[in-house]
Length: 246
Image 1 (cartoon, helix red, strand yellow):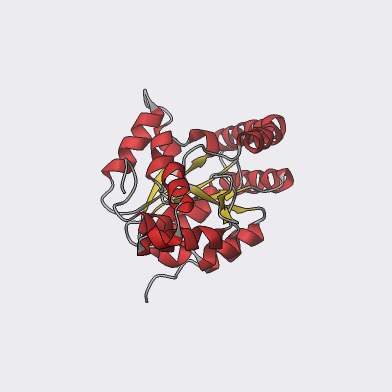
Image 2 (image 1 turned 90 degrees about the vertical axis):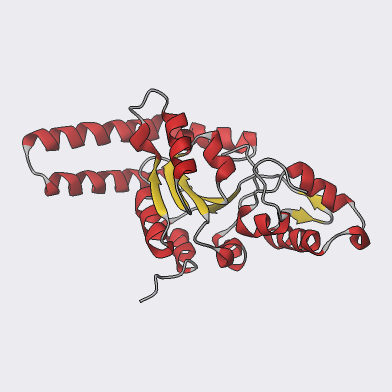
């Protein structure tokens, strides 16, 4: 019942983060209930809860999960070896959320953009993820995430906010950086860098969303994606992540 990148127990893989192939799930759904093993019944039940199986039919593999649904399903099964992605576009607060989740769960925080200057950034990031002993929270813009990390991950959190929120957060980030180091060289660097980020958001943010909508989601991997459309939804999602003991 297993295939490359899928846990031995498919139902457990689904609970942890949907690392179950679409082909396998479609095969299970097509069989009579009396022919199903207990873990296969659990798998179908979970996908029904998530809204990915409706009327005996598998829905679009990139149909997003709401924070509320995630709180009743995948987030109740977080383990020390869980592997998460936090993603979105520039200025949505990926780093802050990823750092908080990794702290609460004792997972390694993997910032993918630190490999940008490497000869092969995508390969370097994927190798770094594979080398981590235990779970991790990988964080980057959507287009920076290597396919291997998508396939290794249990699930992803997609911060998909209105553009104005990104602009305001970029400006706030710039002000904080300038205040922390009020030298002219730093102020000039921060303003130039963040103006470029605002320009990228202005030119490409909506085009990116249109492309993701047409292609069925932000990834073609089987990874399930929790979509937060506002900072308030992200805060509600964080409420389901347990606080560290003590």
